[in-house]
Image (cartoon, rainbow over all chains, first blue to last red; front, side, top):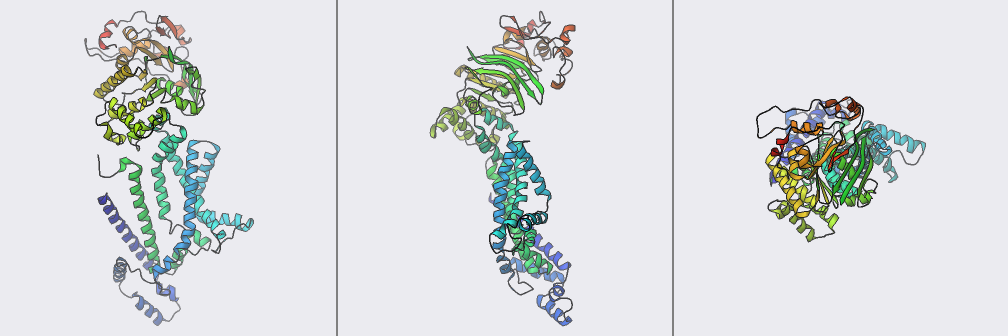
Length: 308
Length: 329
C-alpha cells in the first residue's frame, strides 16, 4: 500500500511539474506581459524598466529555471499587476467559487445517482427516457448556452432570480443550477449504464434466488458493484471543485477563481495563472488518488499487494 | 406426495414462445433430471417457476406448491419461497457469487433471511454449512472473497448458501458444466451425499447424461420447449423410446467396446421464431413419417411410469448393452 502510494505521489508530482511547464511556455510565447500590462503606448524606458524588474529581459530558459525553482521552494510569486502575493489573490477567491461548486456537486450526486438507478430499474419507462434525453442534453449543451437559457427564462422572462452578481443567495441559484443540472445528467447516464450492466450479472439472480427482497438486492448487491464507474465520475467532479466554474463565473459575473483565471490569462499575469493551475492540478491529482484508493475498498479484486 | 406441481407452463419472450406447456411433478425427496440441449428450456422452466426471468417474459400455466400458485403470488410471497422452500444453484459458480462481498456474508445473508437467527449463531451456522460442503478451514475461509476460491469451491459455497434456508427442493442448473472433470465428480458426490443426509428433493438440470444417471431416479428429456420423454432413469437410459433421446445416446462416446463413429443428430435445434409444423423434432428425425410433419404429439403415458411425446416411438432400442456405460443409481 505504501509503495503504491509513493508511486502515485511521484507520478502526481511529475504531472504537476508538466502542467506548470506547459503553462509557462504557452503564456510566455503568446504575448509580452510588459506590453499588455503597461499598454503598448507606454514610453520605451518604462517598458524596459518593467521588463528588467520582472526579469523578463533574461533568456527564457533562465526565467523558466528561476520560476520552477521558486515553485519548488513554495514561492508562487506576486501578481505583475499590483504586486500582491499570487497565493493570496487566489485564496481570497476560493470561497466564492466553492459557494457555487459545492452545492452544484450536491445536486449532481443527489439528483444524478438516484435518477440513474431509477432509470436502470425501469428501463424504457417514461422516466428512463426523460433521464436519457436529459443526459444527452446535459452532455452536449455547453454551460454558457444552458446558463444563458436559464437567464433568459428565470431572470429575463420570469424575473425570479437575478442574472448576475454575488449579493444574496438568490444570486447563486442560476449559476449553481447551470453547473449542477448538466453534471447530474452525466452522472445519471453513467449510473444507469453501470447499473444495467450489473443487474444482468448472474450474482444478481443468485441473490434473488436465495430470497433477498428486491430492494435489498438493488441496494446491497447491485449498487455496490455499479459504484466503481460512478465513483470515477464523481472523482472528476470533485477534482474540478476549484476551477470547474470558469465559464459559469464569467457568465454570471461571479468573483471566483474562474473569473480570476480568465482575467489573469488575458493580462499574461504569469504568477497568478500558475498559482491557479497548480491549485487545479493538485486537486485533480488528489481526487484521482483518492478514487484509486477507494477502488480497493469497493472491489477486493483490485486490492494491490497483500493476500493472494 | 407431490412437492411442486407444474402444469401447462409456457414462457414467451417478445411474443416468441420458448416453452410450450410443461407438465412436471416433483415428489418430496425425489431427484429428477432435466436433460436436453442448450436452449431447450430446461433452465427457463425453473427460472419461470421462481419468478427469476426478466420482466418482459410472458409466463402462463401454474406452478403449485402446497396449494399456492407461485406464478400469481405477490413478490413478497415468492421471495419467501426462494431460498427457503426452493433453492437454486447455477452453472458458473464464479460469476454466480457476488464478487465484492465476503462469502461468509453471502451465506449469512441467506441464513438470517430464512432461519431467524441473529448475531454469533448466524456465523456459527455459516461455518457449519461450509464444513458440510467440504471446504477445509471453514472459519477462516468465511472471510475470503469468491475470487480467492477455485471454481469447484465456489460451487460448494453456492451449495452451502442454497442449503442455508433448509429448502425442500434444490434446483441445480448445470452445476458441474463449468468445472473440470475431476471437480465435476466431486460436486456430484457432494450433491448425492447431501441428498441422502437431508432428504431434500432435487431437480438436476444437465446435458450430461452420465451425471443425470448418477444423481437422479427419474429423468425428463426436453426438446425445443417441450418434455418429449420421461421415465425412471434406469429404464429411460436402457431403452429410450423417443428418437431424440435415442439420438442423444448414439452421439455419446463409449469407454468400452469396439471403436465406432459417433452418430450425430443431423441438423440443428429449430429457431423458436420459426418452429416447424407438427413435431418440432420431425425435420431431424430419421423415423419421421408423413403425419409427424403436421401433428403435434402430446406427452402421453406409454406404460406405467414412462411418458413419451412421439407418434412413432422406437419399439425396441438396439442399445441393450448401454447399461454398462452408466452406473445407474
